[in-house]
Each structure stands twice: as C-alpha cells, then as structure tokens.
Image (cartoon, rainbow, N blue to C red; front, side, top):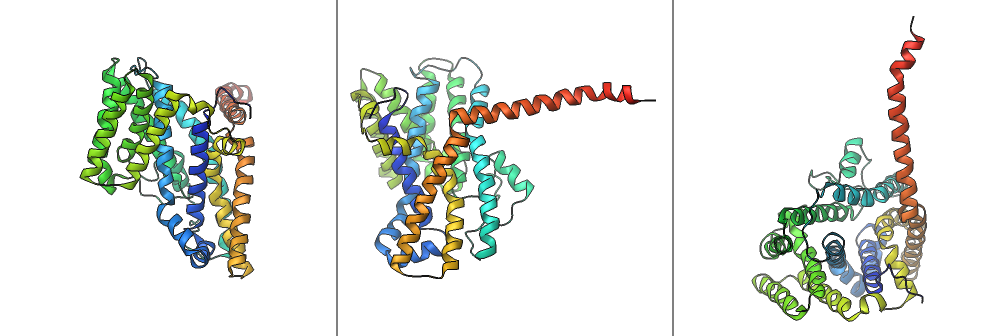
Length: 367
C-alpha cells in the first residue's frame, strides 16, 4: 500500500476497529435482531453488549492526541482567541452530523410503520432538532434522535475545553500543565461520578491521556513523561478501578511509543483498515438508521433461527459500511464538506443581499 503522508496508519487502524465495535455493540443492543443475536449467540453478543461501548475510549484518546498535535504541538499556549478554532471544530462535526440526524429521522418514521420497539425514537420535534443542532441535547435532558450522538456533543465540549485551557495558560509550560491538571482531576474525581457524564470533564481524563502521549513523544525525556502519566493513572485506578481508564492508558501508551518509533505512520499497512479508519466517523453516524430499517425488515420477515439471524446481521453490517462509504463521499469528505458549507454560505449571502434590497424595492413599488 502506498502511504499517504497526511494519514497515520496506526490511528486509522484503531479508529476502524473501534468504529466496528461500536457498530456491533449497537446491533447487539437495539431491536428484535439484537434480542435474537443474544439468544442464538450468547457468548459473543452478551460480551459485545456489555463491553463494546468501551471502544469509545479509543476515540477519546485519539481525539486528545490529535487535538494536542493541532492546537499545541510543542506544548505552547494559544496566543489568539480560541473561538475561531472552536467554531471551525463545530462546523467540522455538525455538517455531517445533522445530515445523519436527518437520515435517522426518516429511518425512524419508516421503521415505526412496521415495528413497535422502544429502540425507535419518537417523532422528532423542532425543539428536539434544535437542541441536537446546538449539541445541547444531553445537557438539556432531551431524548436522542440517534444512537451514539451523545459522543459528538462530548467531542465538541472536549475540544472547546482544551482550547480554552491552552489559551488560558498563556505561557509555554503553564498551558499543558493546566490541561494535565484538569485531566488528573477528571481521573480522580469527576470520572467516578456518573452524574457528570453529559459534561466534558467526565471524559477529560482519557482525552488528556491522549494529549499527554503526544507531548511526551515530542520530548527527549519521553520515559520520564510517560512514567509520570502511568503513575498518575495507576494511582487513579487504585483509588477506583475502571476498565475503561485502563484501556485509555493502553491506547495512549501505544500512540506515544508508536509516534516515537515511527510506527504511527507506517503500521499496520493494511488497506481495508486504513480505509475504514478514514470513514470511521461516517460509520459512527449512519449505522443507526440502517439498524432501524434492518430491525423492521427482520421483524416483518418473521424468521427466528441462527441462520436467519446471522444472515440478517451480516447484511445489516454490510449495508452500514456501504452507507458509510456513500455518506463519506457525498457528505463528510473534505471536498464534500467544503461544497456544502460553501453552498450554505452562498445562500446566507443571498439572503442578506435580498434583505438589504427590500427597502429599495419597496420604495420603487410604493405610491
């Protein structure tokens, strides 16, 4: 495979595996297809139901790693206001996210005609859509329109919090120290209290481990930095053991050593993993509409056997990946995203121009 210098193969592989685990976790959690899968294949699907969600920790650590790379590669503070960066991140997340919400609303309306199941979201309201668009649905206690959309809001909160901390530091050493201090507070206190799970501070420990892995791999004293990171995390686990935090630490160490050794860009050199990693956000976004339709079709078919269940799951996963490929091409890819945002900007500009011309038009049409 020909390496793309803009891609990190190890990160793509981790994202691909994590996205597939999240997809499979949801297919083991919602609807009659999930119930049948857990009945016929209990060992595999009970495990996926219980532990598949932990793959989110992989995304959290990678997000922190890449945020440190993009915002403060050398551990420097942000000298300018973080607001433009936060707005850019919002657009990057929300353009494909809102398109996927639209697909989920349509899929729920179709599935609701064929299937009576609590997995199908209730008919969407404008208030509900607006809360999702503002990434505030979790904070406002509004029912989600699609599975996993809480993570999009958390990802945005995490990036915003990190940017603000790096800007607040204003000095080379103070800025990363603030990030790591807040991450430590998360590991020891906030992450142990589930009432914070709609706020970035609950997840900032894993995010901060990713940032620490980037900064550690930048320094000559890498072993010392990683040693401190490991000691702090192990102490937090001694206070309250959480498997998800152990997984986050493992991924952070893998990224840190991978970057220092050069494996980050070179391994694993597997084309399918690289491709799935590239479209992992699209997989995350569009698999739930496919899940709803697949469950409706499975319920209508009326078959309940290991063969029918396995075939249904296989076709559903394949349809999810195909939908993600198309979604990435037409909605999420940088080219498509620029085309969409450019079109929206043109429409807004046209609206402003028309609004500005209305008084002039009115004066010409007046008596």
